[in-house]
Image 1 (cartoon, chains in turn cyan, brown):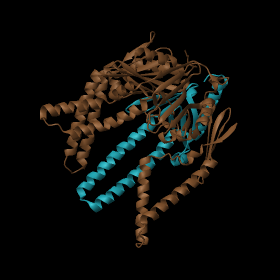
Image 2 (cartoon, rainbow over the protein chains, first blue to last red):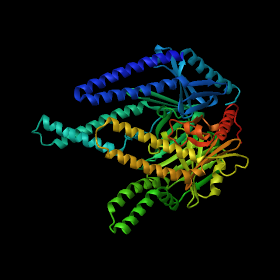
Image 3 (cartoon, chains in turn orange, cyan):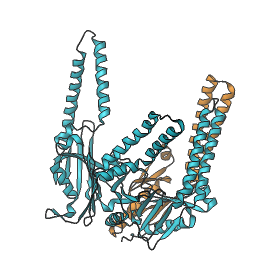
Image 4 (cartoon, rainbow over the protein chains, first blue to last red):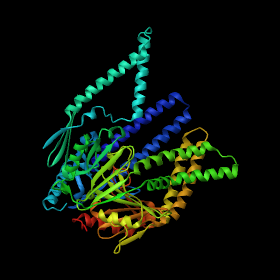
Length: 148
Length: 476
């Protein structure tokens, strides 16, 4: 499902990049000399391509794992992060969908514990539902066993 | 179950800054004057018309607020506090379950003190969306007492509180000392500047001294006014703490010891005095002036007092007899600052490439960055060397700083999340970093940051915390 997200993400970002370069080219050609225009367009395009590929790589390396006690999130390209969220400390859980996510049947799971909000992105909708239900079941089990 | 309304004085209690109110009044007055001038230039008594319009608007606002006051109720039941507010535009209903009340905070502003009325805020231990998790009430002293009793039900027996309360009060001299220490760096700079001016230039530039000292004095006075009347009551048997402080605005905090997330101990090495602060989720929503979620509980005390206080709230400062320890690796930290400088140079070169103007500004940036880097290298080598963390079976302590040593202590069962990370420098130098309690709502202090420690030590600690998460933590 992540490959689907990457395809949609790539398409939208490229479209955004082309539109932006077009606007910039129009403004610069109209109001300034040609050499500056060439530099500006190529520079902006280069920066945006770097950001684009960086974000793409970020999605590629993003991983999560759920165990009966903890949720682990692995992310980062240059700096590798290992995030651990104990299920016992979770206060509420929900899942959100923006326009892109709705079109690609993906969702972001939002986990709230005392003071912090952690978002687990690029999850299949069905998985997101399962995810939230699993956390609630686990929490109920902890409450029943007086193990919170 | 009992339903009440706020005290009627809440109709005229505007929770707005006084300066913005004056600004608004002036703006309104001038607009009315200009409008009258344009509409009918012959009218002479524009001021009277302006005043009348302002009075009319105030009456309309008061009527509106009276209606809101009438429609706003709060209900105390055995399990929860429910607050219901109705205006023309919206209906707001907040319910706080009794066991989730993190703290009760009351403010008595100067002009309300004569009327024996307090503004009370009740918040939950959830730090997310503070506006939705707090209830603000304007109450008379009797009603406030009722709410306090409601919160303290556990410790009321036959109408009397169990006599197990330890109190600490702080005098004026301690508050003045704190003011001097708090503003030490700025005052020190001002003194150095004065000496340099006198001895080198033989001509003292007073405007600079004033420019340095006045902001320092204002900030210091603010701290002073807050801490001047500081008093802390610990009710160990009921696990409650009550902190009151303030000269102009009397402020009072009540909270559960269980809700304390992190304890911070500051050690001023020059005078060998300690400050103890506690951090609670949701605390920052109480007081607009307090941007952090921390609250001072003792001020400029000795080590014995620190140990006493920490013992009362179930923490330890000194006693880590059976513990694991690790110290920072300084070199990778220094290298990380060189990376920041490198990044700055790259950005500057990109800017240079794209722009056509002269580069005086850029040379200033380079200069400032170089100075900062040199300062940081000094700081790192001299100060960060003392950074270390230590932990035993149920508590973790992280020490940072040298002249002002700061220790953050957290119980393992209070840890909300961990984030272990490794960048390029970490990889090359066999180190790792770990941050604990990455609260996004409370501002920074609750984070326990351990940067550039030995990889094995950090991984061992992270695994230890993971194991603690997987079973009900041992609480001593």
